[in-house]
Image (tube, rainbow, N blue to C red; front, side, top):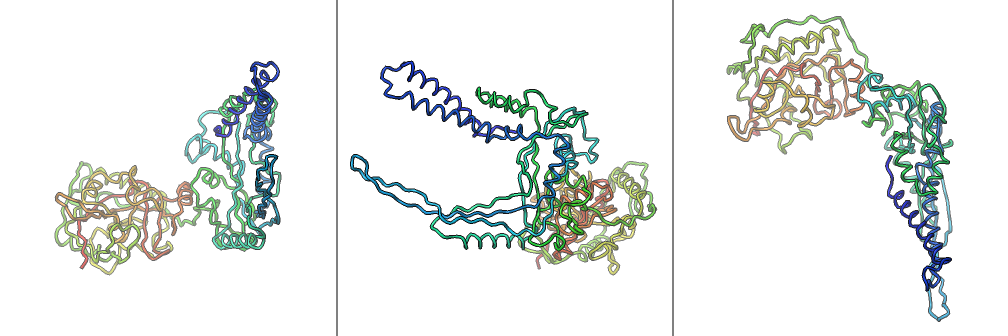
Length: 590
């Protein structure tokens, strides 16, 4: 917690007030100024006002006073949070009409003065008709998860996050009300009803309008929770952490040092009372809440998804919200038999020896690669395309096969590990347009496409780059520390692969000079996809939840199903990708 500017100004006013009181007393009663001209009393009054302003801010307006006034044990706090979760949200509108009246009068010298006075007239208030709500306020169990996520790390095992045992924790919980309409239609309805209320109750020249959130319980915006090992008592705190001691410090102008010391011994957390509402009962809601925690990436929402509640508050029927995110039925079969050794068409065959060769493909093989690029090309541009024009064709000029024993052994080991997990749900069984587009059966394509472990969803996929960058990846593999620097992270921070050459072409860039000046590059990679988490929209929290279960190795972002563009595959382990071919090409706009 930090001291606000108001707090510091209040403390300065308190000091000035005491100084003015002392000086005014000396002037008025001790006569230290021979000709005070009645300055003593005004200075006393001003000093008292300054001092009372300081005391009023410290005891009635400050967060410290609220925390010290509402101190709860762990049991009390759990009951309070459950009460908040069950309570009905309310949205109140208020309008106050007023106008100004002018009164003219003359003083004793005959001068005319105009006094402008505000006159309040019609006042009205109303509540929005909330018929159902869904609560996503953190439960006490989720609070513990959030606390460890915030202060101990990002381990999936919360117990593993605990660095050292803590015998006593003072939590300062700021609990703002946060209400959201469940969808766009409800948001528009809320706006229309509010505007209609204000319009119908506008009866004068000026209006004060306000919207405030309320809740049906004894709401406290700031509470202090004492978590102490071996006891459940709100009095288990130091003697100085008492309200009466804070009052004494305030009287003697020591409230600021007290607050600094107090805050240094406490931990503050933001605990939103989050509710989604509609004028309809929640059983009739069609979709998840628009602003639900399933779509958030903050620490509290991660904790909310990490620790499930028995039932979501509000009895939202058959909801597919945060606590169910990432759950998909997996058809996992028996262990998969995988080949051993390098592909049959490689020049280097002996893995006992280290090799790192770049093999230029023949004209015949290059033509087959051209056919693969052509058959996977789609005349469809997305916002990722950097140029304004869409090429009509990608013309392959050179293809290099990367034969690297070190990278292959790593890939082969990862393939064996995935094989032991059992057969995943195959690509042809997933929602969407079916099998990989890089494995069509009606074209004369490279023979390498036939040597894949399809029972592990092994596939050849494209990755766009520049020629220099592609050769670097082919030499050393993918660097996961740099993922997202070019393509973004719509489906998570991983290596983005595509089955369509035109999609990967959107990310490709040309070398400005050198041997490959004016040319682009695609990597054609052997990719082990394993179990894929299927999703059609960008939803990072849900993806994180799914990956955290350990059931998925990759993400299939199916924008083809959503907006008729492309399917992308996101891989998070470089060992699952072998960058086998570097395809150098130019763009044709004929």
